[in-house]
Length: 244
Image (cartoon, rainbow, N blue to C red; front, side):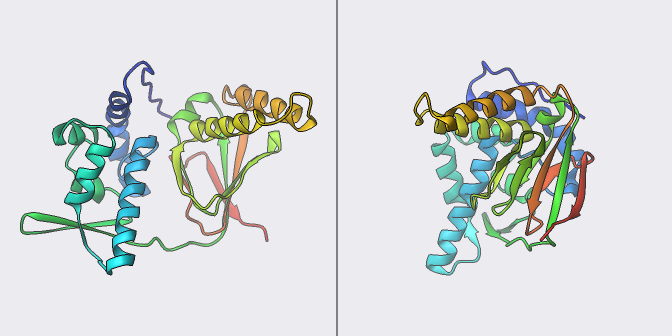
């Protein structure tokens, strides 16, 4: 599997562009898997979420099906801190409509000199269980995981789980684990030093930190009731029916 190495000393915007550039050849080769571009980076997920929220608000309040892209494009450019449209388009490696058209849940059309978008609700699939086999640490970085709003994740070797929080999360498998560790660490800070719960959490934190080194292969099990979670690439994933 491929590895994307991006120096952490770069600014957020430069890291964003570096990740996109590093993934571009892989993304073009995997267009039929769903997303046409790699979406593991948090900033890309933020753009996608903002677009969906913008459209849903307009659709609910005004009954609009096709929404002009110009408004959300300018909002995102300013909100994400880009100096101008050239820098924004450089980061997303193309025009904003081209970026949107890469995602299967977004339709884009042009009328005259204006471009419009609409969100196409994704149809749930059959309930299933995804079992991802982690063999090495590079694989955790190079594998993107889309966790659906109702999906639950479990790492059986640690008896550790991440519940459904009614939000979609798209990131590398590595970052999913790191975010879970950070959330657990923040919770631990609110506990007294001598509590049994704190001691148990500290042990779990240490185990999670060691886990991402992948000294031994391990499984990540995703309970996916609506069949909308996915791994990319998925060659280390097996699919089983979801137990009742």
